[in-house]
Image 1 (spheres, rainbow, N blue to C red):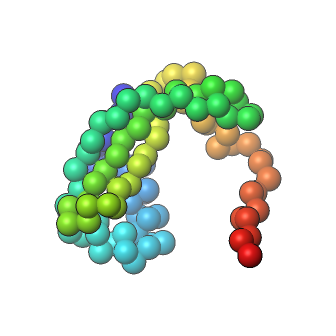
Image 2 (spheres, rainbow, N blue to C red):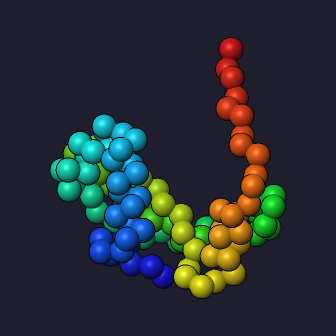
Length: 102
């Protein structure tokens, strides 16, 4: 499994950068450095295009914000599930249209 707190990983730095650019709230919370990891159990999902996936769930709590959590799902490296996610990432899938509530 990929370490949750490997802050030297370029993919991690890229993700944090994207989130920071997209959200002022994320920037403020991230700057506080009040995040701790919580291990969850593997989660099985049925995806309509690639079938069953087993992903690891990581829940990150933000100190001082009891009900705020960041949940990340990721496959074991070099697993069939990682291959399935890579296939989905490379697929030219139609964008989902947001539902409108009246």
